[in-house]
Image 1 (cartoon, one colour):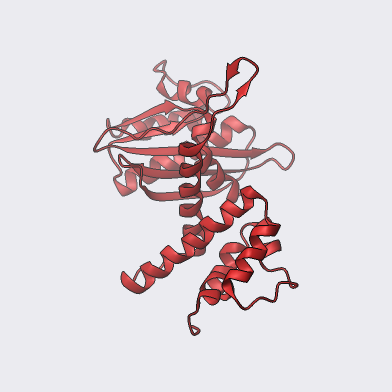
Image 2: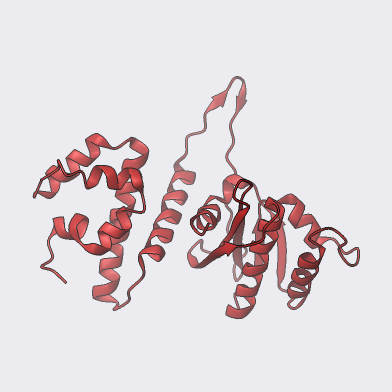
Length: 251
């Protein structure tokens, strides 16, 4: 809506402001009223000096997300929301950090970080996570869908009400993810959860579930049985961070 310049697209555009303000540390520095620079390099240099290394990386990836969105608008006539660009950016940054992490050592033992692995060719992987706050008793669920090449195809999440435990939040998140998979035909699919309890409950075949959450487990079991091309597996929490961020953002 304005005359495009580098400083405009990187700082002054309303879309860019909304995206950068999703990160409080980045927004505090980049929109510091004492930074009156009209030159892009001076502004970027000031931001780089004030931001921590972690926040600087997030800042650069957010600007990259703006640039990719700008190109999609101009060349492909496609527009995304701020939240969509944020999720894609967070996903790219997480992938970068996982693939470039330097393993440290604690004493004689090596620290190992679980990696996300792509599904077999032709399959989709749906990474699920539930979030629960025991103080407010509020919860949320989130999921992302990736293909066998690792590309993120879709995501979703929503607040959850009447939640009684982390297990409750996780199984509700699994339910909304499976419903989405069936509606959108992302099949065959591997549903990945970091809750070993939820995964074991869903793969057991011992008749009706008599636990407190049994009705939800039984309903989800019916959905899973609706298509033989779905399976539920357990993954380590460190390989599930993007879905966790999606869930946390919906609380």
